[in-house]
Image (cartoon, rainbow, N blue to C red; front, side, top):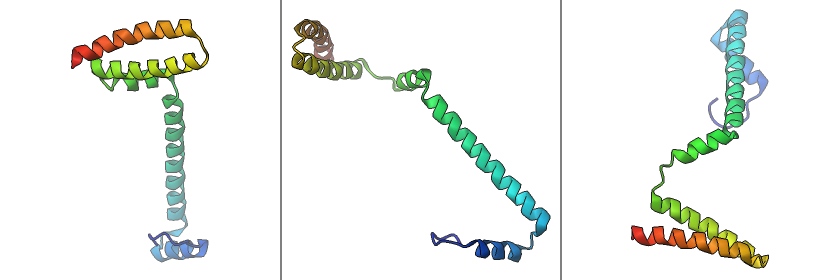
Length: 113
């Protein structure tokens, strides 16, 4: 019964009858199964709720313990993306601000090499 073939309710009942658990044992088993399913669903709902919280994201990000170089590379990638967006929009004032920040990031990266 552990393979992936579909099992009918009759087959399940036959297996239970073979175990001779009786009505009381069957009720106890049903209670345990439902209890575990409820706990799993509660845990799933809790995890889903908690993982969407801002503090969960910031905590997970802090746990990465990025080096200064890794932080600078991430910042450089973000700045390049923003630079492309602002160039397409012809927002050159914003491009100038981004370029200034990019120069700082490049100094950090040159220092690390």
